[in-house]
Length: 214
Image (tube, rainbow, N blue to C red):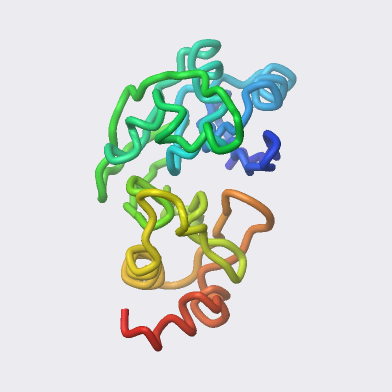
């Protein structure tokens, strides 16, 4: 598997580039800024065919419009966050005095959808809570989850924005991610990667939130 992590934008979003070894085609997950992604693609002779958005907050979609225009890639996002692609307010760009370059989805996703992109097979798990349409992209064969801001190393995404919910996020993580069989490498939207086994045992949000009987 071809894999690269790039840190993009002022909020240091992790953009991921993934594809099968036997093709120059790749998918880009969460292009927070276009330039570092495009520079990497051009330097390595790669072609972006898919842009996969974990959720519609501006720091994760900041480079999506330019990357889509430059490459002709198909942009996928969950149906509940699709409107954020065209809204400075819904994407929270206005909170950072940022003007979003607007775009639109080529496909809106739902929980359980599956698709192939750049030689890899993805499954979509809807994990709302940090945003209404947050998703995780799961590569079963490679035992990898791209989780956006749903889950972090011993942490979770913020739930103090409009459309957020602590209880909803807890249920998404525990019911949908922790219930997956075995371990996975978890690639987060910011900071370092983790594993599902580590978070099941150590994540304070889910370990201690049980007291609220969510």
